[in-house]
Amino acid sequence: SQTAQRQTPPPPLPPFTSRQRVHQLPGTPAGAPLVFLANVDGRLEPQRDCEPFTGRPPLDWFVDAARQFLQLAAASVGEEGTRARCRRAQPLLALPVVGTGNGGARTASGRMISRLLEVLYDFTAVHDIDVALVVKGERRFSAAQALRRQMAPAWEDTLGARLCGAALELAQRATADELALFIGAGVSVGAGLPAWQGGPPPPPPPGGG
Image (cartoon, rainbow, N blue to C red):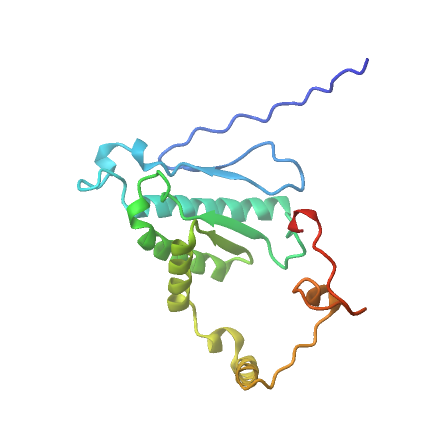
């Protein structure tokens, strides 16, 4: 009979404190995405730290946890030499709209999204790391997109005059029906266009992959 190989349990998670509210989940296998846990449950905070009219912590309390996550994740990525996954040029972090579930900031989700976007713009300006703000539901997604358009730097500042001019020319040609797309079969088949051999595109693989 084969002896079952015993796996060493991961070390216990350090306790959360008022100063350290984010910890990296220990025992993550090599090459797997890093996981971080944060204390954003405002219902457990002492009343002296809560707003008198809501009984919950102020938005800054939730935003501070997001900042801690970003700094800890950036340090962990640098220390472990984590390479970007899926052929990305830079590592990618995912951040939810903290506190808007049952944490106590549900009624302030719009203001929370605005505050988090400010934090993310500041973070990505000084780190070679991408961050995706994960929102739940179409309404919050639309709100996040509208706020991004208001807060994002002008295209000219990001792309430069030459690329902006090229983008404007392409947009004008597309509007005037003067633009034709030339793409490879790997893109066209996935978009439902005929394959190079002609005929209908092959059916998608099981699971929609």
